[in-house]
Image (cartoon, rainbow, N blue to C red; front, side):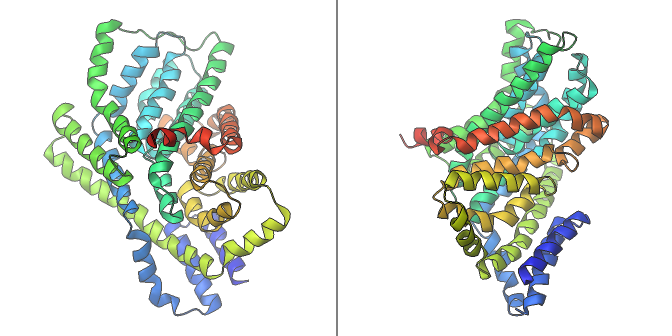
Length: 430
């Protein structure tokens, strides 16, 4: 009963708009009061310390710093200019370039909301010039932005790996495949929209080989970062944390000496912003560890697992049921709180059913992001709507095809054998 009441407190406080960190704290203390487990009050600091004192958690501040550094260097403009020169000769080139550029940019932003904010102001006017309606142009940007948390480095992968003791390096490598499938799905939607309306998707000027080479030279430092992440992990030269350090160093050199859009005074402000954002993420993780602790204390995963195994015998059916559950919860809950809340329960169950932990993690992380595109609470939709000043209902209507295609990709990833999704791991093992 104490667990049920605590969960009710969790969802009620979420709906009331309380900050996530306080939601976890209130939920944890509700459980302590109801069960009178006062000794847990003396172990909370130890729980906090244990949840944060891992090698994997060091990757979070490093990738946050990388994102802050690159956000100040004109990253979006340089990368988009290169991609648009390559594929802008086709009708609807800007819309296609948006999908490809955000895939490459995802290796730097690491957050769907951050990517949505970064690209909206730049790409929205260009999409409008191509003839797309305000709602469609905003939907193209919103759909593209969720790749910011699918393609490595992703905070979701780091948190999932740290909570479930799953290899973050393997999650990163598998994330490239998942992001590629999502990108191809969104490109398909753009293709159908361009083909169905001859008034949209004007051809963008290419600029010739000279312009292409110049754009490539300008964007090369940006391209090196996702190459560094993928190549370092694939070759085994870097762990996820070491890749974060290398990416931050390359970003620092690019900002100060290559793009020269930063000075030493800007650098101090960048470090302060990164430190503040890191603190915000870390305190949420620490607070969520209280809830995870009492889940373990009450043997909730084992209890639910024993119940499910009586009625669900197929691992695939279990995975599909998990997808439905998370899709519903994701409508109301942001990805990070959902991962922190649900994984202490679901990850052990996945192991009981014999599911590959990396494959399961990729499915869960993609699933959690679809809520960002789902009205009426979708976080990315609110960010894009605010940045482009497009009415939320227009954006919510136009996002539906992209959301449906993303759900199809989720289903494909769930049904496919793990080896089909995790093929980069096979390359890394050779």
